[in-house]
Image 1 (cartoon, rainbow, N blue to C red):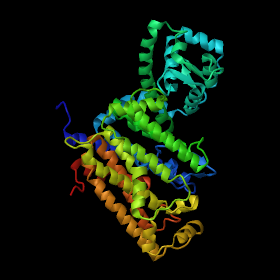
Image 2: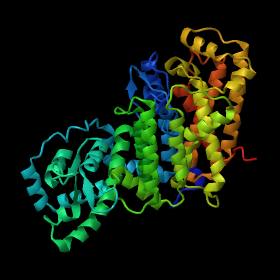
Image 3: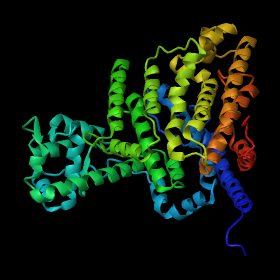
Image 4: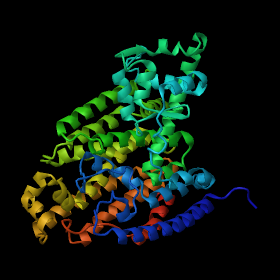
Length: 529
């Protein structure tokens, strides 16, 4: 018996596993779809089509906010479907093996519904904390790590304001020192910052650590800051995007860590606009986004970790680990969110809408491309154009699917005004039909036909990039692309009524698409002309 499987045998095995897993996912999809019809119809809400969103977005005033946040995650949404992730897991037998081997380790994490506040409620007295820090080596390291995160200027000086800022950014609102969770007030009392505006933390540590040991501890604390940062990103991913986290278990460790860091960055950007603590005023949100941009640039400089919280530290380290990463997609995503902060949003031309689609969707592909890798002999620059095209296609599909919902929920129309004028479609009529109902007329049908063909052209451009990707990335990206492209067919089957009818694929329909996509990946029969 041969000691290794042939490529054909491996492919056949992978296909059989894909069908079995896809069947289970299809049953789950159908079940959840029946349960949730009549609720929000957005694909982003996982129960409607069994899509685990890359971000779980906050509900406000009884409706989900549509904005840069919702739109910017379209690519991650598409890549987070259970079928897509299953394809990623078994795209290579190595990936499937990683899933099997790691089941005992990550299953408790996937099934847990832990309240993040459960382990953070115990108060610590000042005397107890000081005694603990003096005696426990690990607590000292964590305390130095905390001080480094508060030292924005890298001068060794921290302020009460920087301490409060750090704790405000913690998901639990607390920070772990050794085995204890402490509050900002605990640290202010411990250091004397409750009585002073600033202190030199190096001098403070000198009161509880031998001078000869302090520099060595600072080096170790820096290393611990990095490892703990990735662990925090991992926890955030597993807590809020369990299916997406499952996909990362198929990746090599360095790829998985980088993916957690990117996910955490995207989620935290989302929180600025649509999180539980998001500021209500558009001007205040814009100011927060400008501050986020400044923070991004400081992380990209990568001089040190001073003033960075644990998520930022992991992100900054990821940048260094993957030197092909480019800051512009991240900055462009923030710019895309700024475009969509105001409720007075309209796009006069396709060029304006294209820019928006690029910023909120294509950027995700460009962020992950250096991490996922390309095929042998293919550069990132070679794959860039197709990656951008895929983001445009996915986002435009999302816009066409949700015309009615956008109009009802936010009073917005994302269709270019020049196109509506060209086909004789009155924007007010779109708003009225979305709110009150009404028949689709020929003018609107012709407009939809035009926009659908535009989206399909971008899908055709995106096809050229599938063979350019690393082998492990080709199948999941191809599945995501094909399943989303089918939504356009559904709009046509609904007689272009996207005011009151939702275009989506059933679980069985998704399953039926998989063999053809798998075969095209195996044979490389894509549009590469």
